[in-house]
Image (tube, rainbow, N blue to C red; front, side):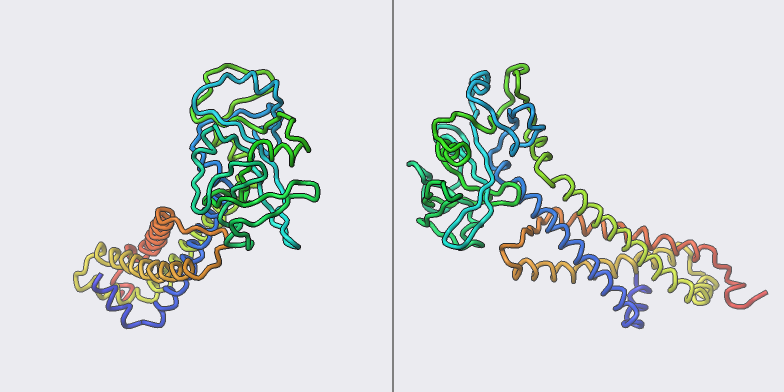
Length: 355
């Protein structure tokens, strides 16, 4: 490592360039990781906040909450058990003056666990008709405030915001929690239609097959959120491709340096320096420039987290960031091993011009 540090001090510009490249790649990986995690959370935050294990949907919905409708007769077939909550869901446009905000209205019953577990950070839970609870992103990004009134269609009732919650997004849209009656008024045009979208179960339903309905895990329902799986796969591919680029860049850079230094390595071998020491030096050099690059990119990522607008769906999850950093370091080790073969093959006599 001593030799690696001395060489880096001697060739500051050369090593500065490769560190800059690693900083940019690591920074891009960290930002993409944060964006992937943030978008995934924006798709599922509300569902995760319910802390449920299972959901009962219409069997024709193919596991998608948005496509499920359970009639009152079908709902009666589901045996009652503790930790059970009916919900209704519909995508809406909240309208205030000339402003429209895409949202997901979720109807819930006040005597069931989802309503009871809603985390209110300002105001209160709804108690009366046409009162709603909204996700804090509607306040932060769309200009809504406690006590504001809005409609979700020209014919809908006028709703009043009485409470604000956090971590309540569904399919990247803020959730509007309403009473089940208000949800039915919006979706079916009448509070007397007893249809729902799903039954959420804290514990697995202790009942066999139900005609026209299906039981699936909450995770399976999340995977059916439009675009969720494809979006995650895209980000994983992009991050994986960047890690591959890291391997290639480090391998090429160190290979070129190694080829340039073959005469010097030959002299060191003649002087009795072990090949093992020279190989460790190259790998240590790779680790050093990678760790320096990660530290700088980590600082840039922290600054980005401080200044990025709250409307951007990006969340820097530290375990994921450290995991990504670990993968970058692993890729740097792999990249540094490739040129070490040239060191092991050096013949001192040939390298320094002997016969």
